[in-house]
Image (tube, rainbow over all chains, first blue to last red; front, side, top):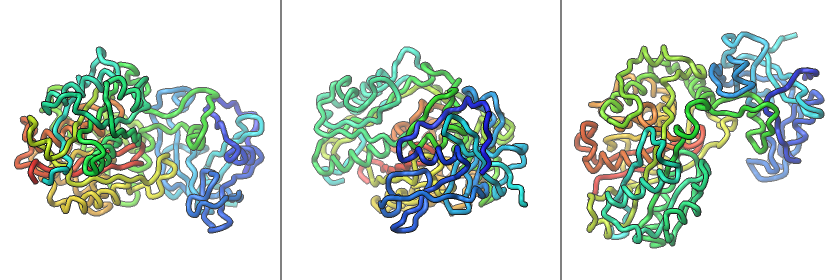
Length: 142
Length: 389
C-alpha cells in the first residue's frame, strides 16, 4: 500500500507491545499485516499472542490491502481535539479480502458517498518514525 | 419458593439525576442506606457484596467494602460495563443457593454529570500524540466515539433488514412517555418521532434523541434467602433465572454487527426460569441508545431477527402496550450515570411489588431486565417474579 510521508500527525498513537509492534512497523513500510494460525488456519486481527480459535502461536501474513465497507458511521460530533476539528468523518469496519476485519477511516471522498459494500483500498500515513497507520479510500480499479 | 431460593428484598436509589452534593462513593452509601431501610435489614446482616469498580476514585470492590464496612464472606467485583449488576445478581443468586453467604448487597454510584459535565459525552479517545496501549490501540487513531460504536450496529441493521430511523425513534418516544410520570427524570416533556429524527445527528444514523442522557445517580439491591425474606418488610421478588455472556469487548471485534450475546443468554435465562417471552409483563432493557433496545428485543426472542423495527412501530413498548419498556423513563430520558444496569433491577422490583405509582404495569408478575455492557458486548439477562411464584 502507498505510504504518505510528511503528513502532520496529531492523533493518538499506538503504544504497542512486542506482539503488536510488527504490524505498525510493517504499515510504515507499506505492508498491511494480519495473523494466520499455522495449526488451524484461522485468520485474525488485531494481533494477539495466541490464536483465538485453537490457542496456538499465530504467524504474520500480508494482506492485499483490498476490502469492502462492512458497516460505517459518519461521526458528526466529537468532544476532543484533534478529531473535533475534522468533523464530519467516516469511521468504518472493513472486510478485507483475506477474511479479517479492521476498523478505520474512509477518506478521499465526500462522507455521503460511503456505503455498505463500497470497495476500498488501504494506504498508510507515516505517523512517527518506524510507525505507519493504515487508512482506507475508495478503490480505483485499474 | 424453597428455603434457599434467592430473592430481592431491598432496593434503593440515591439522589438523581443531578446531585452535586454526592461523590461517586457517597452515591453507593446513600443507595445502601435506602435499600437497608426498604428491606428492614440491619447492615450487620450483609455478608456478601458485589460492585463494579473502576469508574471513579475509590469505587473498586475492596475499597468500597471497606468504606461501607461490609464484612463479606462472599465478594464479586465482576466488571463488564453497564450490565455488571445483572451478572452480580446471577452470581449472588448462585452463592446464596450454595450457602456461601446469606444476604448480598449490590451497589453502584456515579457523579458523572456533576464531575464531568456533558462536554465529553460522545466518548472516545482524543489527545494529540497520546499513546494508547492494548487492543484499543487499533481503534484510537481513527476518532470513533461511543455513539459511533452503536451507530456501526444501527447502520448494519438498517442495511440488512431495512430498519428505519423512524422505527428506532419510536423507542425513544415511548420511554419519554414514562419519564413524564417520573418527577426525577432528567427530561419529561413529550417528544414525537419527528422530534427524534430531526434532532442533531451525532453519529449517522443515530441522532441526539437516540442517545441516553448523562446524569448522576446510584442504586442498591439486596438479595437474601426466601426463608429470611419471609420476615422482612417487603414482598420478596424471586430471581427466576439469570444468565450472561459476551460476543466481543472492543467494537471492532463484534463479528455479527446485528446480534448480541442476548441471543444466547436470554434463552438460557428463560430456560432456567421455565418461562418464555410470552410470560413477560414488562421489560427493563439497557437503553444506552435506541438501537440497543431493538437488538436486545430481537435477541431475547420477542420478535425474529430483523423484525424489531416493525415490531416496535406497532407500539407494544409504550404505556398501555403489551410489553411496557423502561417504566422509570430509562436511560434515554431519566437517568444514565455511566452504568445503568442497577436501575433495571430496581425498576423491575418496583413493578413486581406494585409500587410503581402512575407507571404501574397492571397485573405485573414477571419482569425481564437485560443489561448491555461495553458496546453491546457483555449482556446479562435476569428474570424476576412476584413473590411466591
